[in-house]
Length: 335
Image 1 (cartoon, rainbow, N blue to C red):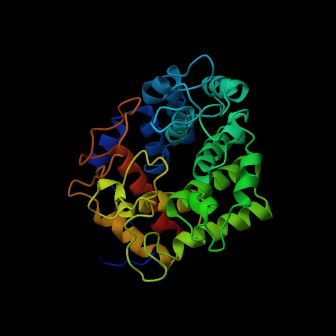
Image 2 (cartoon, rainbow, N blue to C red; image 1 turned 60 degrees about the vertical axis):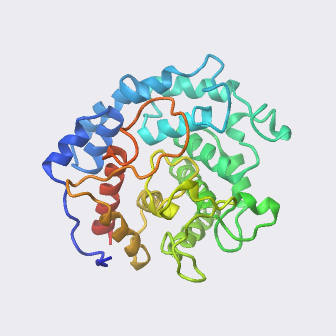
């Protein structure tokens, strides 16, 4: 890989790539207008409002049951539960102030519990109080905070679960003392969303900064001890059945999985000033740009998606391309 300085200008997307990105769903289009081409704010707002009434966002909202749940569950091992759909609506940028979002979130807050979906002791927990696993609680907290819900109970629990190396691990309850990239990114997104929603506090900010230093000190995909590329940090060691290291393969949706692009996108949203610890990860992102200026979906995690959002693995992917372009823009303009 060729290493660049943070002052080097990013190569801009071609007109054909921009046209391809804009020729899409409102959930993608408004983010391209905001993060790639810098459209006027009023035009962005008009396009964003369409997420609730057209395309993928409207489809997901229409799938909510009268009892507030999606997929009949607070959480499940598929991708159609309440938690998973709220995470997708967050990624799509559904406006939390829209009438459609308020109605959907009111139903969740008032009716959905963890009964039958987590540890029995959490059966009566309201959805936004979370359960016990930090990976799940991170995702619930991130979605809840984004949509203006009170997730302080989750945040307090996560703060108490941070490990000595700065990250988090769902296996800590079983004695693990080393953090997991997968769990850590879920928690970091929750802490950041909470800060953006209600304001920063010294306690939350300090924990979050320690957490993202955990990622940066490992160059976002290497072992601190040996410098080797991390192939996986799953307890079964299967790497999802993929040949390439898991963290260097880009997916969307990511669900609980970490990858380099997700880590960089978190740093971008957190307003971090890039330093040399992110340079190799940026090189990796740039190396995956195709000759046509687009990025492809490299891995789709086994599931039955509630709606179709892409053309499948190995195909040019608007979500990956959008995220890659705005990460590169952040790196070269903020560095």
